[in-house]
Image (cartoon, rainbow, N blue to C red; front, side, top):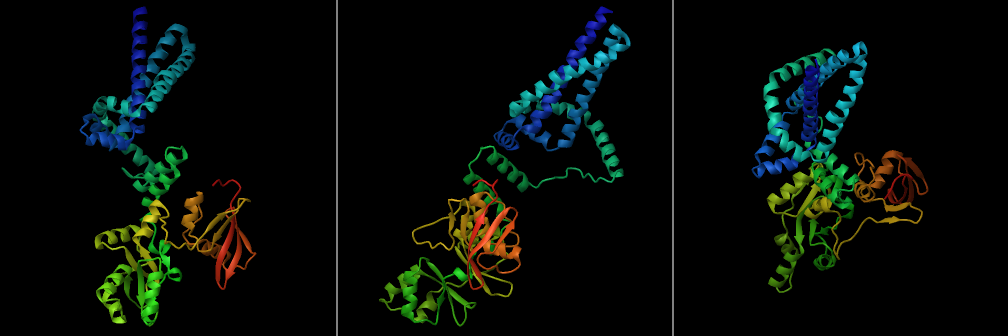
Length: 425
C-alpha cells in the first residue's frame, strides 16, 4: 500500500510539472512578439519558423494546449482524491480539493506563466517542437471539439466564423503604437509620425489641401510687369495661372522657368512667353486619399496638383510637402507664410485662428476632436452651433468650451478654446 501511495504521489508530481509546461507554453507562444519571430524566421531560425507555423492556426494551437492541460490536471486531481480518501476517508475529498488547488495554482499556473511572460520568445522557441507534436497528435480531437463548439454557439444564435479577424492589421498596429506611447516606449513625435502613415488611407485631399482662399494665383490678364513682380515677391516657386475666371486654370508657372526664359530672351517676357513656359495643370479630385495622391506624385515625378470638386471648380492645391507634413509634422522654411496661429495663454486657454485644422490641434495637444464633419476649428464650431456665431458667443462640446473672439463677414477668424480640466498638454 505504501509503495502504491509513493508511486501515485510521483505521478501527481509529474502531472503537475506537465501542467506547468502546458501553461507556460500557452503564455509564451501567445505573448511572443510576432514581428521578432518573423524576423528570426527570415534569418533562417528553424524553431522560429515552427513558432510562426503554430501561431498561424491559433485555434488548433490553443485547443491542443488546453486539451492537454485539462487532461493532466483532471488526472492529477483524480489521483490526489484517491490518495486522500485512502488516508482520511470521505473527508479526503475536501483535503484533496484544497491541496490540488494550491499545488496547481502555484506550480502549474502562476510560476510557469510568470516565467513565460518575462521571457516569451525564449519559451516559445524552446517549447515549439514539443507543442508541435501535441498539436499533430491531438488535432483530430481538437477538430471535433471545435465543431461541437461552433454548432453549439450557432444554436445559441452566435455566429463564430473560422479564422475570423476581430481587428484589421492597421488597427492592431495602431493599438500597439498607442500602448507603447502610453507606457513611454516611444516618444509622442514618433507616435504621431507612425500614426500619420497609417492615416494616409483615411484622409482625403480636402482635409489637408491649401484652400482656394489662401492660394496665391496669377491672373494671366494682368500687366506683365505686375505678374513678374508677383512671381519675384511670392514665397512659392509654383503658382497656378488662370484666365477669365479663377476656376479656369490654364497652367502652372515655375519661378525657375521664369529665370531661364528671362536670361534666354535678354530680359524680355511677354504673355505669349508665359503660355509657352506654363506647365500643364494636373487636376485631381478632392476625394482622393493621401496615399493614392502620394503614389501618383511618385509615379508622375510631380510635386504639385490642382484640387477640384465634382463640378470641376477649383477647391485648392496640394503639394508633396503637404502630404509629408501629415507624417513628419510642419515643415517650415524662411519663405513660408503661416495662415494659422496657436497661442497658449497663461490661463491655460488656447487662442487659435479659425482656419486651424482640427488634425493639427489633435496632434499638438493630444486631443480627440472629431474631424469627420469639419476640417477646421471654425467649421467644427459652426457644425455644432448650426449657425455662424457672433463674437462673444461660446459653446461647450465634449467638455471643450469654444468661444468666438473675432469674425470677419461670414468667416470666424479667431476662437478661444478652454479644454477640459482633465486634459493635459
